Length: 363
Image (cartoon, rainbow, N blue to C red; front, side):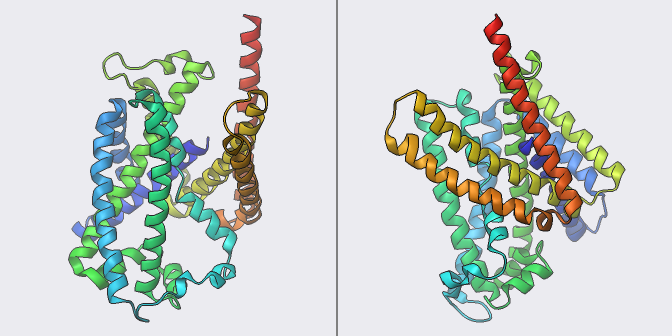
């Protein structure tokens, strides 16, 4: 459910960003839902085929976006912003300023997706080695890249004016910095690569959601037909089609209800998805300890200490997110409704698992 909500949030944001970019470059005003539908069609075609094609597209987009962002980062750091070069953003005393709990929540949101590497286990070569390696490398690389980029943005904007500028124009902050430090070409390049980045993210979650659907079908939690791979591509093509149709219906429903793609669709659904995934991480940490308590293998570090620390950290994060959830999604009523959706999905999933176990015992 969390991935399904995040998928819809991304399609709205991608459509709105594309509409804004097309209006900027060509002067044409085309509704966001038209672009969302086009991106969904492209993504559906790529996801229908094997993972190799999607990987090539994602690889190219990732290299381009990281390259331009690193160029901008280094220019901002070496040239300095309105206040010159400063290390004040690294001062730990600033941690308690503002709303740290919301900052932690958005920081976690930036890492969402690293856990999905295990979904591609059946399509990876030597998964026992490649999947853990990909997971650890991605976490370290993402963390370092985010930390350096945020520091560079703080320097380029000026620490004393960063919050005001980010609040005033959150969607254009990076493109404005690109114009200031790299000129018009840099601004245009960043704007295009932001779209490529969003598309890469959207394609990733389409692939992940399709494989979740495929695995649920193979496990009997969804119709068995969804758990069958394509005979030639060996990809979860049927599940991919279902995911595409689900997103198409979500776009149509959003247009019918008059929802704003960013203020409503993206804000609501990404907030709910973040909360759901954090809860899932906490429960997974607990499940690891319970499982290895009855299956004594592995080291004490990996079977008890690490998941214990993880449980405490994610448990605390769940508390902070729930406490500030109305602020995140823009209202108490919306917060209650979204939490109710997650709760229903959790209860439904638990009931399906219990019924599946009961049926398996009776066979």
